[in-house]
Image (cartoon, rainbow, N blue to C red; front, top):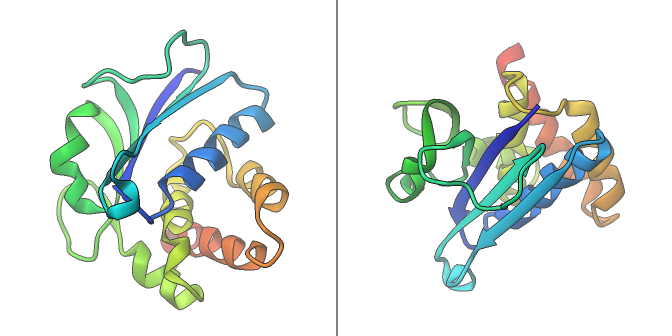
Amino acid sequence: MRQQIIVSGIGGQGVLFLTRVLAEAALETGRDVLTSETHGMAMRGGTVISHIKVGDFRSPLIRRGQADIGLFLNAGNWAVHGDYMKPEAGVFMNASAPGDHRRIDATALAKASGSIVVANLVLLGFALTEGSLFCEAVSVEAVLRRISQPRQLDLNLKGLRAGLNVNRK
């Protein structure tokens, strides 16, 4: 399977951690993976985008109009990075208001789970329920158990599970 994924957000939203989780999940399942990120002003709340290519690729950058999956940690980033998506792409957004694409208020669910810092994992869990990502929840959980800071592990798992349980209610 070949898959091109972008993760878009604002500095401090966990774009880079989510990118690492997905890259490690690819390795966990025996797949090749390339990543690249642009985060120039991220430390000051600027826009961040990560490119993740799973499968046999030569370059880590995704061309505009070629991404299969988009994880938008901030719905406002659609205006900035939406043109990376294929017309038939799976687009998942952290948004409290209804609108286009698959939306979930990941921030509210993260807060209910204990901290807004896991909104990225809530969104990932939600995307995993659709079955369009290259990996499954069990692989992501294994990665979280391996790479999370010990004091953050339980919270990370709660965030992921909050997203996984959205469609089960």
